[in-house]
Every structure is written in structure tokens, then in C-alpha cells.
Length: 126
Image (cartoon, rainbow, N blue to C red; front, side, top):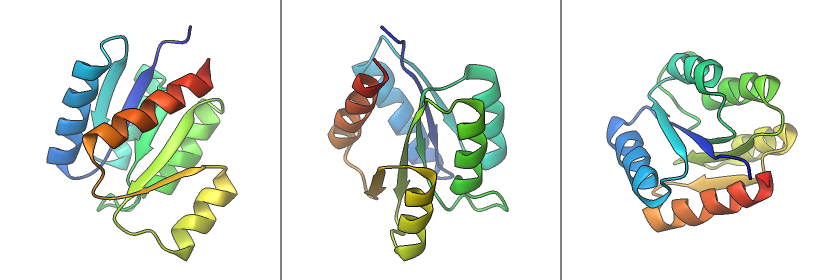
């Protein structure tokens, strides 16, 4: 069984912190990390080798979630990704399709829905 290593990337600290703590409580078998920027995300990808990533698109810096996604796919092509954003539009959908990301989730995301989605992603890793 593959151990879930989850990375949540969102520039809204409260969303990241709550998501990380919630998943740690509900999925004690998983390692769960958070990153508040694309730069932090790339460091976390290198350090922890996550196999599940939840990415916001708009990270309030020059590096958006799709740049993190591209670099993450290079580091671990087998990882599962979900784009979690408040701005689902044609561009976001086309970028996700181009990258092979099947999960686009609009904010706000309920914690129980996030848990269900992450568990589905974990099952895909097995």
C-alpha cells in the first residue's frame, strides 16, 4: 500500500492550515504538508515527494499553480493533482485538460468533500 503524502498549496494561510490539520486528524496514515506560495510548494515537492497535491491557481506571486503543477509532474508523474480555485473559467479548464488534471474544484471546498476527494485520489495510487 502506498503511503499518502499530501501537499496543500494555497496562499490563504487559514485555508492551508485548516486543510492540513483536518487531513492529519482524519487520515493519520498520511503525511500532510502545506505551502503558501509556489516557491514553498517547489521546496516541499523536492523535500517530501508528495503523491497527492491540492493546488490553488492564483498564488499572489509570479508563479501560479499551473507552474507548480508542471514542475510537480516532472518530479512525480504518477502523483494525483486537484486544482482548487475560486476562479474556474475556460482558461483554467483548458490548462487542466492539457496537463491531464481531472479534478477541478471550486472554492469554497467543504472539509468533508476534500476528505472524500483525497481518499479517492489515494485509492488511485494503489
